[in-house]
Image 1 (spheres, rainbow, N blue to C red):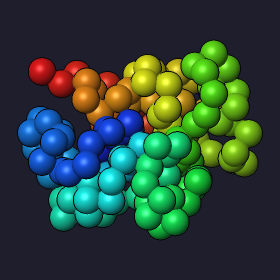
Image 2 (image 1 turned 180 degrees about the vertical axis):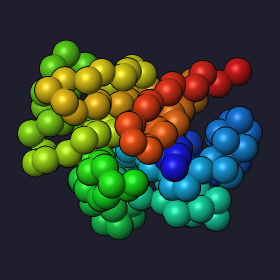
Image 3 (image 1 turned 30 degrees about the vertical axis):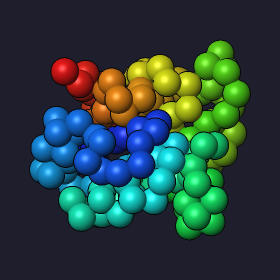
Length: 152
């Protein structure tokens, strides 16, 4: 099972996203956006591609901030996944976002604009990077594998 992961897209419409993202996400089981859409039209556009789980980011519109939670936690393929945007500088980001969740296997996050895959204390931390330059694919079966896909 696959999850398409985006963060920090910073665009107003779905048409501003790379066609590479739209093509890749048309074949995933779930789309997760880790915040900083900017406008709600991007969320609505992603929902036309498939099921979407999303959290709000610090630069999202007031409409999005009222619609979306700060954190999301769900089970996918038997794995517990937490989603949060993140805050502060990149140094110590994983430690900070970890405090938002209890028992999880994966934490998807953004904010730092730095694509990163890191396993700490049995938890996989996955930041797909800014949507202008990269996105992520999370494959969940017996194990969980994260991949950063460069746009271009």
